[in-house]
Length: 323
Ligand SMILES: [Zn+2]
Image (cartoon, rainbow, N blue to C red; front, side, top):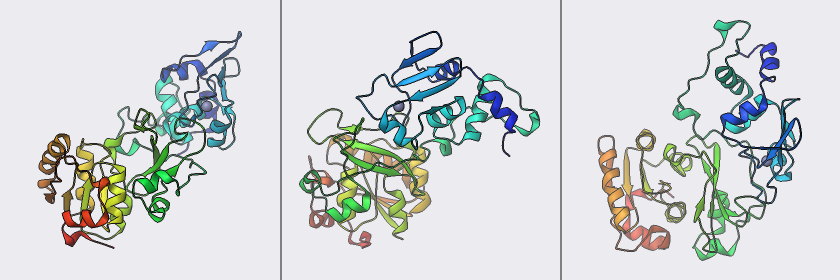
C-alpha cells in the first residue's frame, strides 16, 4: 500500500540536517542556510571530491556534485529527505518514507494504513541490491593471469581491474551477489601489496551471504566445496567443482542455513594454517546437524588459490566434479 501523496510532501519538509544527523554525518556551515562536507552516500567512490556534498537547510534538499557519485545515482545531483534515506539504506522510496515517519513521528492521514518498519534489521534487509554496476572492468589484466585465473573465469565472475575513481580505483574488483543472483556489493583486492588487502563498502555484511552461492546452486550439484576466499573459489571453480567462499574464516548461523538450504553435502577446504584448521572444526560442528560434512586438510602453508586444477582435484573427492 503506497503512502498517500500528502505524506510524501510532509516527509520532504523534515529538516535535512536532522536526517543527516541520524546517520552521524557531520557537515560544516558555508553560509546562513548551507552546510557542506564529505559525501556520506554509498554511491560516492571518488577520493578526489572530498567536499562535494552540500545541504540546503531552507529548501531542505541535499546535493553531491562528484561526477562519479552523480553517475552512480542515474545522473541526479541530489534530492530531498526521502531520496537521501533511500540512497543511504539501499531501499525504495516507500520504505524510506516509512523509516522517516518512524523516526520523526509524522502521522499519516490514515494511521492504521501505515505500519512503521521494524527497527531491527532482519536478514532480508541486509545487503540490499546495489542499484548500479561498475563500468570498464578489465578481465584480461596480468594480475589475474599471475594468480592463475583464466580470462573466461574472470569474465564469468565479472572479476577484473577497475580503472575508475573512488575507493576501488586501481583494485581488482569482485562482484558479490546474494543467493538469488542480485548484485549487492563489490570487493576490491589490492594488487600492489597496499593496505588493506580487501576493501568492502561500508555497511556490507559478509556474514549474511556466501560468495558464489548463486552460481553453485544452479550447477545442480548436490555436493559443494566451502573455501575461505574469492580466489580460492575461482580456482576451485576452474577445477570443475561447485564452490562457495566465506570471505574470511568466520561462519554465521545464517551462512549455515543458506548452505544447508541448497546442498545436502559439503566438503570444507580451508587454508592449511592454524586459523583455517580452527575454522574448519567450528564450521563442521555447525553443519553436521544439517548435512553431510567432510574436510580436506591441506598441508601447512598451502591455500587452494595457490593450487593448479590438477592439484585441487588430487585433494578433493572425485564425486564433486560437476563440469
Ligand atoms: Zn557523493
